[in-house]
Length: 120
Image 1 (cartoon, rainbow, N blue to C red):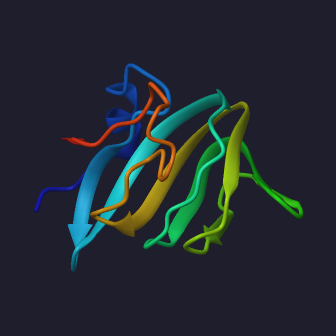
Image 2: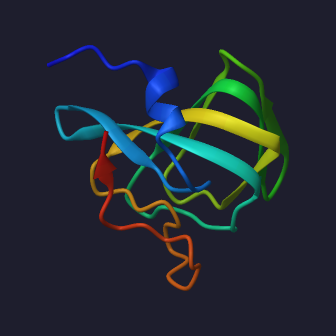
């Protein structure tokens, strides 16, 4: 596998909230996404979701509290937990999650839902 330059990879992302696959490890995808503003309340019934902020700021609103992440900080949202990611005002994130994970989880109606991810 070749070296992946994350700065170059982020520069190729043209729309926010559109994850791209940058690597695969034992059935898990390493994905990057450029986030802007508020996403949608959702949960993932079968998958945990790891958010690692590389640049910017991300607030993950949970039903009982908020988790605020800056560069170099990560948080794992356990499966089944409703969450609302909010980039303040933007964030570049690396997501590590099972390959089956869909970005909007149980929210089937959000127009930002992406089931077929592009590999960078």
